Image 1 (cartoon, helix red, strand yellow):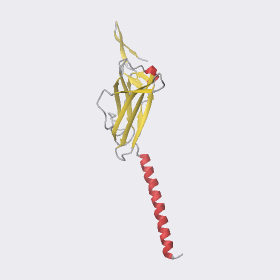
Image 2 (cartoon, rainbow, N blue to C red):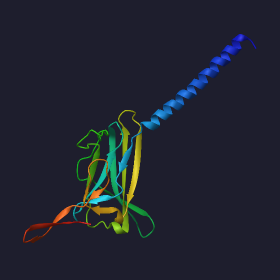
Image 3 (cartoon, rainbow, N blue to C red):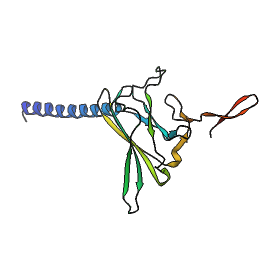
Length: 187
């Protein structure tokens, strides 16, 4: 073979190999800058009211954009078909969630979505299904997460602040005693 043909083959081979390597590096970059979202494993119910909250924590070091979330009450009907009814959030929709930072003393990266669930929804006969979709503020990659909740996944109290998903029991006033008002803790 002539020197020209060998130079063309070497140039072409080098171009193909460098293109593959660049694609792999770009793919790995996108894998590391995807949105990282934590959703609470339990739903928090406020002191035997019909107000329920689901906690969302942005673990990404960039804002979450284009945030969309829904909550459905799902139930299997008598003929075996699944029926879903959307439950609307009681507060205005979130469109962005602040980036995660240990220095953020207000924990604006952790939000609680509030729902008012009517008594006519009997969760013991069905389940709640929460879905969230969001885009990474820098790379614009997106993710969708779905979480299913049964009746046993509902706890009374308030969410702990920060990244914690624990639900803290709220002290409620007990009956008055001679020395003042006693407090009890909800289990």
